Amino acid sequence: MDETEGGYEAPYVGVTGEIIDWDAMDLTSTGLVRRGHVVNFIVNGTTGMITLEMFGISYEARKLSSRAIKVHKPREAFIRRGFNPEF
Image 1: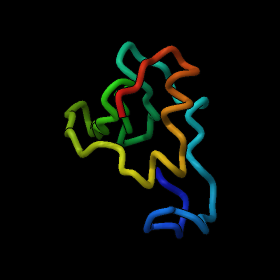
Image 2 (image 1 turned 120 degrees about the vertical axis):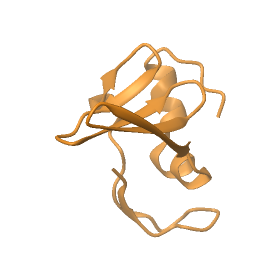
Image 3 (image 1 turned 90 degrees about the vertical axis):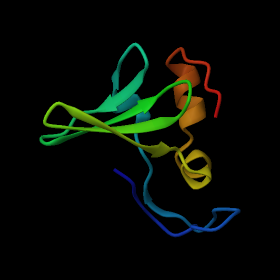
Image 4 (image 1 turned 180 degrees about the vertical axis):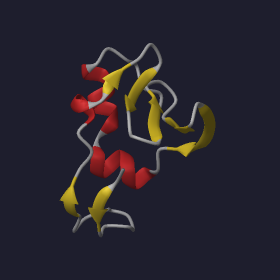
C-alpha cells in the first residue's frame, strides 16, 4: 500500500515515491477502502485504524503511524470526504 521510501524518523523528511491517493479509494460509511484482488486495505475515517480484509475475513492491523499521517496526509483527505478524524 505504501509505495514510499525514506523519512522513517521524525520529522519524516526525504521521502521519495508516490504517496497514497486517498481520493482514488472507495468511500464507505466508516472510512475508505482500497480494493485489491486478494486483500482490501480499509482505513477508518474517525480512528485511523487500519484493517486488512482477506477472503472476506477482517484483521485489525494497527492505527496509522505518525509517519503515515505526516507523509500521506490522511487527515486532510478524510476531512475532504466528510469525516471528522480523531487521529
